[in-house]
Image 1 (spheres, rainbow, N blue to C red):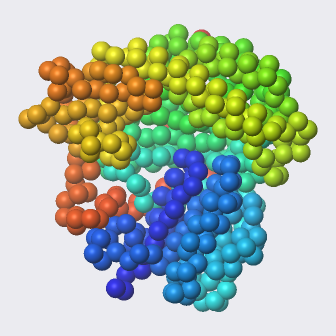
Image 2: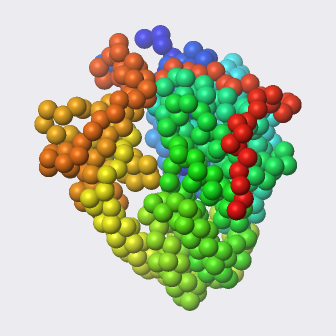
Length: 509
């Protein structure tokens, strides 16, 4: 088979997932074909180009990468023309070390030069030598690059890259650089283009979305952007991640509450409930301010589901500090939490701090935190029993759907819902909306069997479902169908001429 294939493997956060969509778009523009898009009988075991988009934040990220590279070494030896590329945060951090440890790697590129991948592959092929190119700052905003989206009806949209914070446990600012913001007109133009293609849900991405506007001097820019998204006809759901509690302002809460298509879900990273630990982390807020934000959110958005990030075992954390975290978790009533055991990240201030805790202590505290959060999550989900929810149907969310004969999707508050289709009832497509009633609240998801119990079950076909269906037409069995590559949105040097809607001026009360 003469078709050149690629396989992009993603580790880490939503930013990395979106970067991988750009890498796929670049490779397809260069003439490669997604390995997963080929029908199974014609699909080779290994692609001609394998790209690892890495993360440096997760524990054992390096071990995972080198383990994966080791597994590919026999394939590379059997086919020297095969190419392996490593990008992302770990590549930005380790640079030429990757080629030293895995000399069968052909290309190493960083977080600031994603767009260089096709040229680097060509150069490595021509020179028969590894190419390592790491830029220290962003030259072109990534949204100008072609993108191969994973979904026909949902999309990521970057509003900023980089971070101006200096949290002592985090290496992201040194790898992603200082914050750079896109102009509002560029963001809205991209969203409008996505909606025209059938997208019904967008998630606004940034390392710290609520400081959006710092580059062009508008501290209310993020709330205005949310309101402007509400003016886009056909855009049904808007989400964003992640804000920082220190910069979270009341105008954003009001914008969320007053903009119907901004979803009642909020990810608000706490990290620790101890003020002493927060200070050591250089998190410029304290537990009282954090809880105050949640109170104000719930005053205006009573049904908001709030999620968080938590770190257990930060250097110097005492039992008293940990108890403070448990107290804030109880008071916060998080719908769910991403919990992490602190581990040393070389290059961060926390790595050099005294008071590194024994693994056994961290594990014991971690187990207690998980147990508490599960109780809180379960209680919150049980309160939803009997309530109607609108679910955006998504494939692949329910790992047991085949066995349980259910479909799955996300409620407006982003809770995962597994629902049953009644006999003879309309079967929704991915991208369609379904209204069902919750019959059981489990710790990590909701069950909605109301349709088969004679209760509410209603399907609303959407443009997102239409886009998904159109994508499947003419498809081959055993092949994965994704949207075609979309060209990047051009960047403009001057402020956009496109005026924001009048409603974009948000009150601050």
